[in-house]
Length: 249
Length: 105
Image (cartoon, rainbow over all chains, first blue to last red; front, side, top):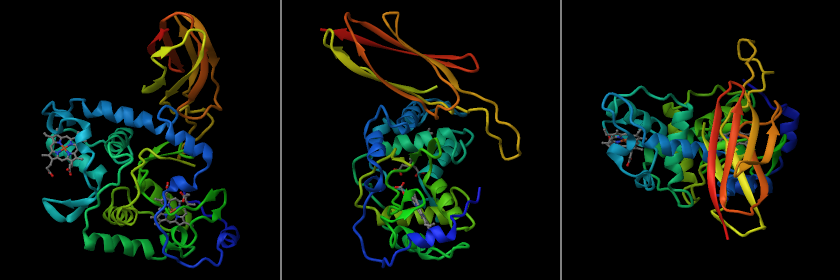
């Protein structure tokens, strides 16, 4: 799957831009009018199919106890205010994002097999829960150590092209790379529907694409370093409204 | 299969209104190969029909170039109150149905 952007094309895209502190802007601001219209219409936004499936899964009984998410948590809307990532209360050295949190409930509380990262079911539940906060700023747990760890990853140059996330998403935001406009790489729309994927995908899947793009070794989905990175992105974009499910090229 | 359909509940007699219908489907075109080089078998929705009180409003054959999660938007004119029904037919023979009542005033 590793796909390198031809270096000359990339160099052409690099202007003399210097890292300037920019106010956070959603990827939506960089999207084409067609994509923006698609995202705004709940009956044309394909991500809403996953949200609808997640809403149905919320009420579906499963596992040894024959319980559903609803049995313990009540209405799905009760999840509107939750803040993820956070630390595992039972083992504070372990970071959890929404996906791994849901899997933990599946296994420990319901006695059901995990769905698996990037499975249709886990994407659907994650999208349905995030969608409850759509249009609102999501709260971020202010954990200095975890956020600093994520920022370290964000600023580290990596891969054959020796590029950090910041060099594209801070220094080159608004510039073109092949057929795409580089945005600030914000996380507020995830899980997001990507036309190229022909489906919904997690934030960590997007991280893997960006790692591969510079010839760097991607981390596993749901890994601790990706969750720390996710935490930093959540903090970096904390003033943006949640858009899940966003539609992207 | 998940589908999302948008139909206004109340419409004016003789006035055109918009209907939107989207289905969650991989629309595997049968031309791709997996990581091991094995052909991925074709699996698409090959037919979509919309009826209004049993009468065909829109009837389409779908082919392999259609992208995943196909979306349709079209205009319908209603004369009497009744039901719009939607039908998607999968290559494997399964049929997904959805219906929506409309009141004409």
